[in-house]
Image 1: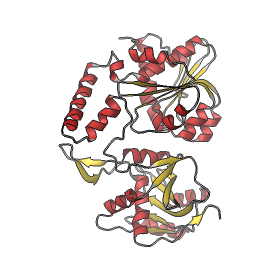
Image 2: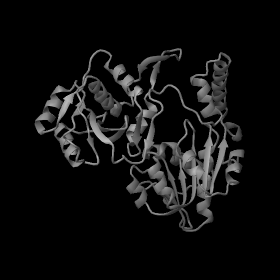
Image 3: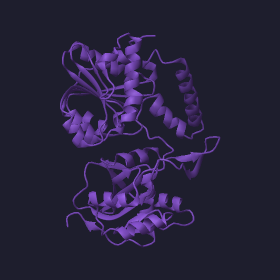
Image 4: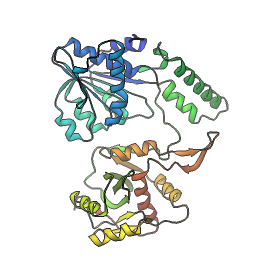
Length: 398
C-alpha cells in the first residue's frame, strides 16, 4: 500500500510558522508524515538542501532512513543511482538533496553549513547546543518527539517568535496497523485499571505519553529530576573523577565531577572501547585532565589500577563492599545534580538506567545491569566520598 494522507499529515501541512514543533503519541504518524513532506519540499524547490537529523547514526539509519526508503519504494519513486549510501544523501533530478545526519559535537553542527529545511527527529534526544547550532542555520524547521518529559523545545523554541505547536495522537492516524492499535488499546486498559485502583503507576504514565501525547515522566528509571546545562560555570569546583574499565564490548569511561553551591555537575570526558591501560593514560594526557584530583575506579581491577599508578595517574580503587551498588545509587539520588549537554553518552544512560521487574511486572529494588558505564564511575566517587576519602576540590577560576 502506498503513502496515505492522514489527518496527522493534513494538520502538519496546515502549519505555517518557521519552527514547527510536533509532539505526539506513538504511531501518530509524525515521522512517517514529515519525511514525505521534506521530500516533496525538495521536489518543489530546485537546488535546496533538506537535512534529517537524529541523535546517533544508528538512530538515523534504523529510523528515518528506513522510513524514507519504504516510502519511496512503495510510491515507485526510488532510483538507486540517486542514493549515496556513504553520505546518506538522495539527490533529486532538480539537484535538490535530502540528507540524513547525526552530530556528536557543536563544532560539527556549525561546520555543516546552511540548509533550507531541517527535521530534528526525536528532538528530545538531541542536545540543545547541537540543535541550536543547526536551527540558526536553517530556513524552515520541523521537529517531532514523544514528550516523556519537558525539554528545550518547550522551554526555548516555543517561547520564541515564529514557532508553532501541534499535538498528535494515534487517533490522527487512520492507517495505523491493526496489530499496533491492538497493543495500544491493551496498554490503555492497563492504565485505566491503575487509575481505577487509585494507583497511577507505570502504565498510567506510559499511556499519558505514548497514548495521549501528553508531557509525562516515565517511571522505572533509577534517576529522576536531573537537568542539563550548556556549559560548566567558571566558579564550579572540580571535586573528583569516576572511572569504569572496559575494553571490547564495554567502553572505558571517565567523568569529571564538579560542585557549586552544594549541587553537583557531571561532565563526561571519555567513552571509548578498545583502550589498553597505556592508551588510557595517553587519552588522559591528551584530554589534559587534572591529575591533582584522584580518579576513583573499579577496585575489581587492581592490576589495571596499579599499572595506571605506575604510569603516573593518581588513581584509587573505589570503596566497595556489601550492597555498594545500592549504596552508591542512594547517594546519587540524594543530591541535586545536572549534566553538561556535551555528555551525550551519560545523558543516554540516565534516560535508560532502570529498575528490574519480576514476571508480573512488579518493580524490584535492583537495577538492570545495563546503561550504567559512566554511572558506575559516578557511584565509585560517591561511595568513596561517603568514606571521607576525598579532599576539597579546585575552583575553575584558579
